[in-house]
Amino acid sequence: MVSMKYKVTWKAVIFPLIGLAAFFVYIYIFNVDILQIIAIVQGINLYIYLLAAVAVLLDTLFFTLAWHFLLRFLSVKLSIAKSLLFVWFGIFIDILIPAESISGEISKIYLVTKEQNGTTGKVTASLVVQRLIGMSINIVTLFVGAVLLLMERELFGTIFFNLILILVALTFIFLLLLILLCIKEKWTLGIVNAIIRFAEWISRGRWKLTTVRKEVVEAAKAFHGAMREFGHAPKTLIIASSFSIISWILALAVFYLSFLSIGYTSISWGAILVICSIFAAAKSIPIGVPFEVGLPEITLTTLFIFVGVPFTTSATVTILMRILTLWFRFIIGFAAQQWLGIKAITATNKNNRMVMSETEKT
Image (cartoon, rainbow, N blue to C red):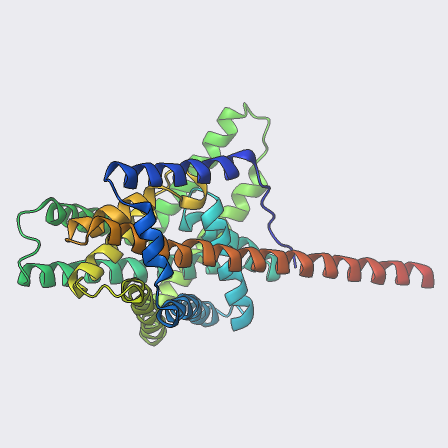
């Protein structure tokens, strides 16, 4: 077992502090009483809030099950426990490195490939299919939420409605491009060759990438082969989609339970569906800020205010929600990273002892 290590730099400390400062400046500008926020948090219903924490754990579990079944279909043998460990590690990397889910997915490809050499293309295909499923669910959720808000006459003619239209259009375009790349093998190989040629050009011939080119092309061909297999496996896609839908429902439950924990019940399900979808899409855009702190909180608070939630309540729920969806997940992800590191050291020491033992015998 070989685990990826992340070196903590000054940026990883400074940027979260700047983000938190920006969020508190934001709520100060809107004259939100911080003492009132503290008072609301002190009166929280802990049972409901703990239920929201359980929903976060179950959300990750069902997300993992969806990925596990996609991997299993491609004959990539990975236990559910190890899959869950890799997912938590990916979440940890997502939070630390400002490329959101892309960095987490790269870490999962790395870990699985170290476990089973030659599976890069298959693992990549499983992650791309899972992303396609997630994007499709997000578009449907946005549409359903918008319809509910229109029926409640809370949306038509507002900036909020225009934001939904733009987000749906952008997500659909990205989804379409991703599907085309999955179908058009020549496009993928062309992009790979162009990137390698560019790398050779900027290195002025110092980098000999012939071996790298061969490995990447083989992985790309394996990826497209796996995508064709998925195209003839509706049962596998239905199972993975079902687990993904359950995971998404649990993510929505975290939003609702966070409001319920402070006794606020005036937000509609239409608003929850739309805000959760917008937030999920917005935070997946690389913004160059580690820990994704500050801007996501400001975005979430603003969206709640848009749908009529009082300023103080919006800020309070945002804080409670981000404790669960950011810091709680970060702590578990960090624990997963440490466990992988310990296992890697243990495996290395064991191999060294075996080599020394064989050497002594000879």
